[in-house]
Length: 435
Image 1 (tube, helix red, strand yellow):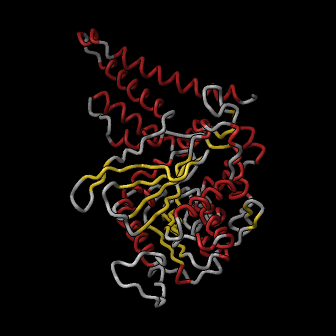
Image 2 (cartoon, helix red, strand yellow):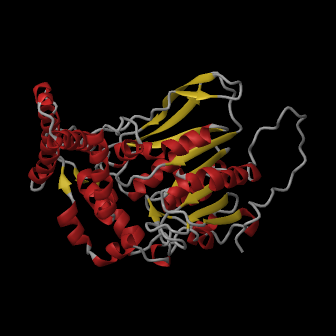
Image 3 (spheres, helix red, strand yellow):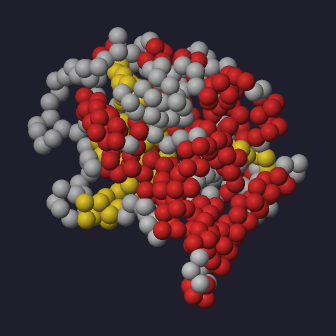
């Protein structure tokens, strides 16, 4: 019970600020005040509008908002989002376009469990739905998971990925984004030894910390500075009575959000000040650029304490993945066992979270993989977000990833041609193969 009061105090502060915003907006918009025009009242109403929306979004899981999809026939088809596998800590979702033929590429998009919901990859999902069957890992907010569901650490996360890959079958192309990159690599290596027939066709790793020491960032520096005891004392709290996960130890989403904002405090302060000015002038709208971004950015989820602590200790401090010394359920994973899964890494030249060098380290770990099945790409001028959801992803990276999948589809179905038993040689991953 030691930290339950602190957890509830944070939620109380969030709730109070949402109420202050709603009150200011309602009071300053009182019809009688229109008889006495006053710029201060307009500003007060604008502040209330922005404050109420911002603090409200912190406690709401965003909707995917993908209801229809325009296909090549020019018609809008409904999109069914179905849970293929349901687990206590996360589900495997399938974005099924109703009435469209099954697409030749089956993609498992592995979303991070690092504070934000999987909906952060909404634009990535939309871009892949054009010509892929898209599946996404949808992680749950730890505050809503009863203590009876047990623990969830990096090993459990890896085993979830193993089960999802088995469910989807060997024709799958896996795309891991950010935090789960090293664990997706570990899950693939685990399958290479335990269930080779379930291995995916290809593995695309985007901006993840396979070897955090390869290039220092604020994130890696923080991991080095603090001790595990300090992290446990300052970051971990127990979920309050309001939620189903009462008593569960978590790294609270609100605490994570304060860390996110502090990294670029000046930029966020200016963004909100500008939005208040736009609202005061009547130039803000429900779906303007500011609200579209911050509705997602401010929506945070609690992370299981054991997952957060084991990530810091095993991925960043002791570098178990980078040293090929990672153990899952008592089995030591050996990355050299990956011999038949094409691996591609993608990094952003301006990535300040997972700097260039951290992700490409995965290729050096795969010593049993032929060079023609390895590939890498560094996107000039791209930051962390841009390499999976921004303009760089849409214009440059996505086409490369699709080409990489096509070049390494050993289980793809033949296209209306007589079957042949002749064995064909697999194509190189792409022209940018790693030496």
